[in-house]
Length: 601
Picture 1 (cartoon, one colour):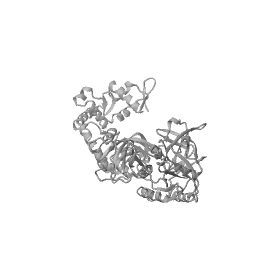
Picture 2 (cartoon, one colour; picture 1 turned 135 degrees about the vertical axis):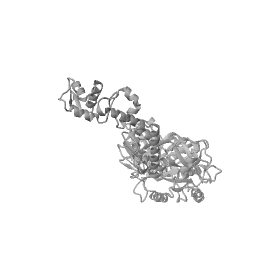
Picture 3 (cartoon, helix red, strand yellow; picture 1 turned 45 degrees about the horizontal axis):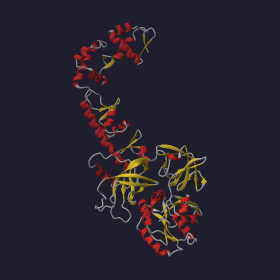
């Protein structure tokens, strides 16, 4: 299936033309038929000569009061059938519709001059072609017809066939983003939504994201028949399970879960309106139209580029949206002035996860950063700008993750940023060693905070950099490889303790002796961490080999042995023997029976 949207001034015969081509009534509401004017979107379809697939038409209203509805129909559709009446010629809404199509970057279409039985169509055709030639559509093929008499309809069907054949092939494997243009209920089925599927494939049973929730496709129809699957491009109706009519409506989007980023702050490039040589002054509040959505947005210019007196036709701005939308770099949209009801320009989305602008001059710097961005999802460019980002976020931007990008913990790192991180890590470790000489290194979590890393696992990538080769990580801490260990004063005090223990390895020094040597809690903790002493209990410190010596002496005792026997074999007091045996038991080197006796394992 291919989809074409109508465009043109009110009462120029768009619905009559669709009716003549398809034999179907596109005006759905009784009021529309009573007034003879389309006020909402209509849909119809037909088959065309030499085409194996049907063509569906989205019939949009032409009245100026219903431009929002018109944009909802045109937004997701790749081609237009622009209609001008021979007896009226080019009219104000013709201009507004063309301005909208130009802002959205629509390039494929066909001019149809209707009511050719009421006036000579050549003047209206030539005038329309002149206007169209100044837009993104360029000089289109033109057909003159009469919906009333049927004159020219065979030529129109042939021209439509040629238009459809020339449209780019859709990507049926792409991530789904279906903009909802209608939502209603069907008795016995529940909520049904319709939209134009521009890319991807949907199957019955698929789960799709609707805002922050996930919904299931219960059934599908295309062109009035149940189908499974539906592949782009297609007009499709989805029956959603467990969704109330008040929970979905025009402007919502159904997307492949986890593959789209929903954002309410986006950086965009705004082009000038059709025919303008310079950008217009943007009001503080605008209406952003994308897909079938129309969302109010607050404008923050990022630089003076594009101001009316600058001579630059484009400008870069930040939009803060009233509600988040699933967008990607490269998306096309348009801005309208909600007060003056005029098109302000076309929009190209550049970034849907922009950084905060906190410092003075940050907006101008950001504009410079985006100056070379074309709005095409690019993994290397995104990583270079962001330095760090989640893998899922890069995928959701529509970029393919390169196989050689450094990654850890679900995060990706720009390879060019790793040397910078390595240098900063060395500086942080040195600074910590100077400030905290008794600690055995900088804790990994503190190192991650110092480098502004979202996950400590990324430290492994930094430590693997040549610039961090002077560092080593052990026990959850990072230190310099050539670090001298304990400060000189602590090393000397520990040496004194070791000398005291040389002849009596289990005569642990008393608290007053440790204090006399300057070994307080922090110093003793550093000595234990460095492996210079071993702590077997509160206030009980021995030489590192004391545990092995104790096991060797206890092995000479008959098993099991009592605490008193162990104390005598070790040549120590109960103050040391009790915590020492408990320590050995915790290590699994001894065990205690129900009678309180001990034995080696």
